Image (cartoon, rainbow, N blue to C red; front, side, top):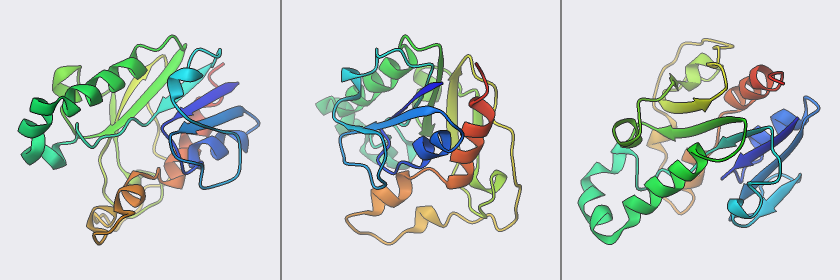
Amino acid sequence: MRVLIACEFSGRVRDAFISRGHDAMSCDLLPTEQPGPHYQGDVFDIINDEWDIMIAHPPCTHLAVSGARHFAAKRADGRQQQGIDLFMRFINASIPRIAVENPIGIMSTLYRKPDQIIQPWQFGYGETKATCLWFKNLPLLKPTNIVSGREPKVHHCPPGPDRWKIRSRTFQGIADAMAEQWGGQL
């Protein structure tokens, strides 16, 4: 199966699919952190290359409720609309199976409620980080390893230049569940 992981620099989801025998590629404006098939550039350069599934992680900076205090300025200068437009381009892509991921945010109101909200503690990590998923022709993810210790650790990362990167990486247990459960959909 040909798998596109959009807006992923970590390579975690891509590598989870590759380890299960799929032809997967990550794409981001940043270089990949792990060696592997990666297109560094605009995902829309390659989005029509006959993918079977796309898992998209559009930036949440202008959409997440955690930044609601800045929404007025982001609406006024167009940043929020750019985020909405990017999210919707992924939702409306001509790929048979799609998952679009984002935290709790305005897309639940502007587009529709997510199909599923998952937490890291459902996939082996004793943390909380509500992650919304919107699907096209994909089933809900089934929890694989429910654990205790439900703390918002990743949200309490100290300030710094790489804080956004730490907070945006997909937990490995979630990446593995996506590859395991969605990898057999064809």
